Image 1 (cartoon, rainbow, N blue to C red):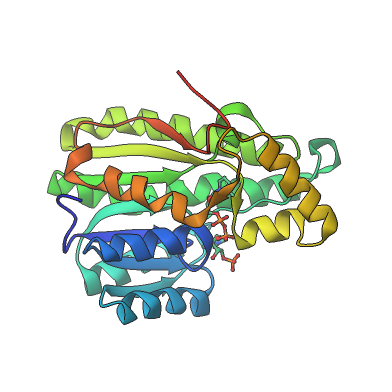
Image 2 (cartoon, rainbow, N blue to C red):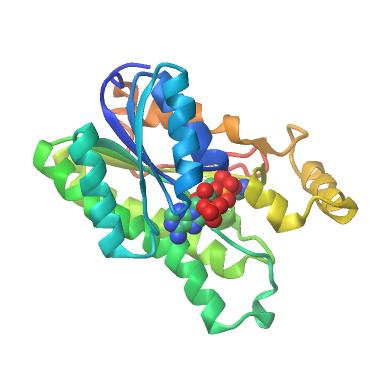
Length: 255
Ligand code: NAP
């Protein structure tokens, strides 16, 4: 893809699942990749996979819910790898519980990771992009944020808020060539999905039910998303901002 080589991309939650696939693909496209994750060992494994394939990457450990840690990690990676061209806000978390059975402590955890996390990263990285007159911020939101998902009520709210946040900031920084877009996965086979529905017979039944709802006849794989993320970070996407794109096999179809 055009205009990616040697530019730096920061990917949060890149130690696992969708974030790991995105980090590896962006490195294959010639980007220098900053791998951010709360799990240092997982982040280092992603870096090792990129380096083994001939790519350039480094990692920093941070909890996206902690603004000070986020700023320190961004500084650390930018001093090693150069200024951030693309930020991929991917780290996320949820646990399926009906809303009426949840408590404020759980809401706060979900909001901190899924909404405050992307805000922290964006606030740490966007000023540099504005100063350099260019950059891309890509949010891995969710179809849950577009149509809602039962058992994931607060998470759905966070993803919907993320989509609105991205649109509003896209307007504020458009004249500085900083473009923001959201990618919305549907249900996807990742370690998060394994802990979400389980890997036993009951979990398989839930997966089968999910598949029945998808016109293309399967749930997502982590490798379904990096192509679109690379495109949104590339020169070819330089007239696209404030958009929300579902990658979910036709599960949701928006006009
Ligand atoms: P995943 O396999 O659990 O990977 C998420 C990564 O983020 C993990 O390495 C995790 O570390 C890390 N992380 C979690 N909390 C963090 C924090 N506070 N600070 C820094 N890193 C943190 O998840 P995934 O399924 O790939 O999900 C990636 C994104 O896609 C999320 O935003 C999710 O909401 C979205 N999404 C996923 C699905 C799906 O069905 N899988 C569907 C729609 C949208 P630990 O493993 O150590 O916690």
